[in-house]
Amino acid sequence: MAPSILLTQADVRNRVVRVQNAIKEVGMDLLVLHGTANHLFFAGLDGLPEVRPIFLVIWPSSASAFISPRIETPTYHSHEMHRRGRG
Image (tube, rainbow, N blue to C red; front, side, top):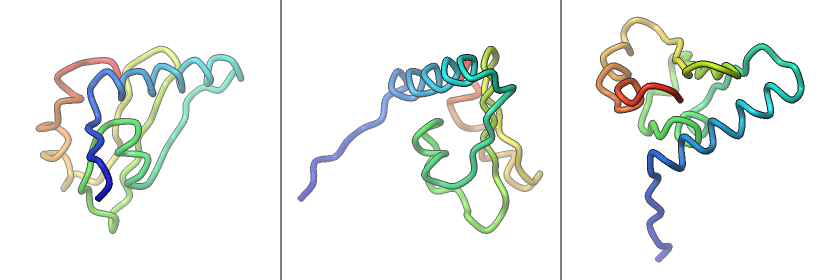
């Protein structure tokens, strides 16, 4: 049985900061990510539906945000990422 790996807020924040630094380094305006693996890796969100388009937008110098159909709004507002601010 594989060991359980728990994702902490610090893990998620560090991942986002590393991506933000890379975005700045290459001169990009933002990075748009799609897919449940990206949502889990960069935001700690798991179990989101795959049938609707849900995008994670990472800016180099401001908080990350989700773009999704209105039906998904309650899912994101209840997630801790919105309460902790940046990333």
